[in-house]
Length: 416
Image (tube, rainbow, N blue to C red; front, side, top):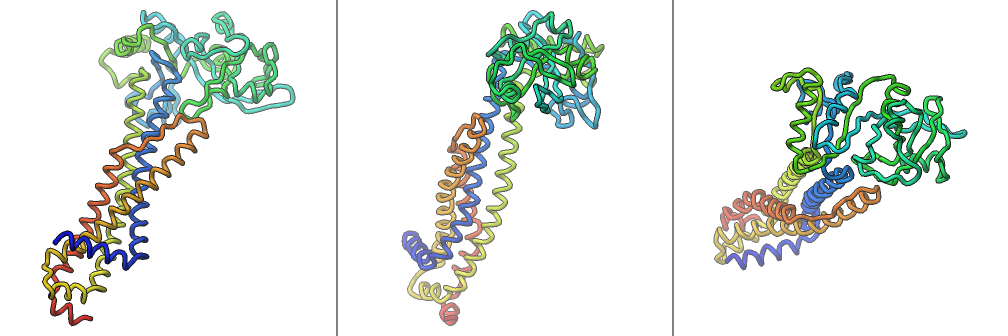
């Protein structure tokens, strides 16, 4: 009986091609978005891991944090909240952490924007005041010249190393070593150019100009603190213990009791911890977007129910005729239920194809911006798409199907 019900359902949909196609299209758009959102989540997760990989293995970061706020909280915002800037992270803290036996290299840093000039050109550019060991921690190669030394940092020397992009913008590819640029109207001698690094978290590292940290603090910004420090460990497998050790050192430096976590004005993060944290954020956003898309699919299900009601009303005589020649309630119910399921499953298949194409276009666009975007259609997303489309068809097709099955054949024949 179910085979004949399926055949009648299929024939009925073919008779109403325009209505069927439009309904399938409406469902397929929602399913395509589900597949695309999951693929985008996988791609973004790959980008996050790739960006963290630019800092290399065995890296640990120490940054300022608003006391009484979790280091994962949005309110922290790297030490700035409600207009307040945390200024308690000092150069001495960096030197104290340098003494830890598992710290191979470490540098303190802070960033800013200033007017930088060369010749007749004056551009607003990003500056980073960094310790002399920055290239050793970050694994950055020097393409031309050299990086500044410990002596130049301690002596507040006016020297600068250019990121690859900053070099191109200021010197247009010509040799900059030995030339002078102006920062806030003062001359700084260019001593080197860093190799191309690309972007990290949508920030172009190549557009940076590096100056010695103490020079940046005293001569440019007029401050005595840093906003973050980055360290390279001798043994990355000891990352968790090193994290605890650096936390203890920072508390001692800042006069914070060992068990008084709420007063911490800093956060110590390993790259693994940062990857987990960012991965959780990406997954949370992905499932939030999928939930929103599923709501739109539910709204589409209401549309299917309305169409099925119209179909039942239009085919009342047909239902009465089938019942009069022996079709029972179950056969009629399955005929209309199969119609709803065929529509939604067709929408699911078409949506998966459209979603795969859309996800591929998103991947191409992301890669054109230099992001390490991974194109991946997960089986989980396909399962969700097909399963949810089938569920929508069953839920919203069941009531109209039951209404059709309950029609009295004599009453139905009289409505011709």
